Image (spheres, rainbow, N blue to C red):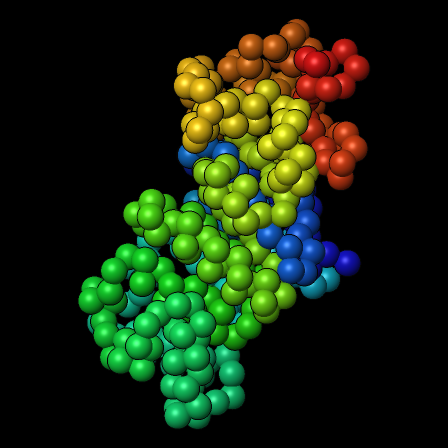
Length: 326
């Protein structure tokens, strides 16, 4: 049984003109110890899915359909108090702005110790020892002294390491990392990704890595789900998807990544922009931007169909299929 199962998840925004669908029947699963990357442009719905899983959707957004199960238990219909007990203990969260995720009025040590004591039956001395252990595990030098530092006294990379330590305080089953390296210098991003991978694999935790960066996905993820306009258009092992992307949108994302050491070439540009929630096209949502669209794409929505290699694609003309793009 997968650790996390998301089935037909639908998220809407309630407006005066009626509900607007932001995530449309998204389905995926993550096994224990596996890292799944969720990738797409800004506005695709990635962060909404992550927020729904950890139970922090706020009005006017709401779950309008589907289910979310953790270790076989349904969690999308729990009340706020029940979800608060799961969040932190069974689900750890890492957000893109480490300064915003930490309380500027409390020391790093106080925040770690209080989080540890909420989820584990430890006294203050044991909680402090555990905090030191966690800071050392995420690569913070001189952790005993850093416990007395305030968030603003640390660099962005150090703050994100603290946020990872907070997420791992209770040895959660699942870690949801929403753009964990966006606010960091390029030189620090790879370090944080490797740290996240190492820390979670050592503990056997599953990871949902939400990002717009396919390079980050390729660095540490086992599988990738590509999201467009709230719909998953391709999902499969990272190596297979990167080597042979089947959906035109996936090919566009990969074509926009510069290659170090390769002959200079013009990067691929996906014409147009992500549609507004009140203007999602009929049929395949990507068809106005797709150079290979046909009449069927404009009138009929493609569903995710298996295409071997433990992957699935939502496209009427997927690359490599009979009658496809070759």
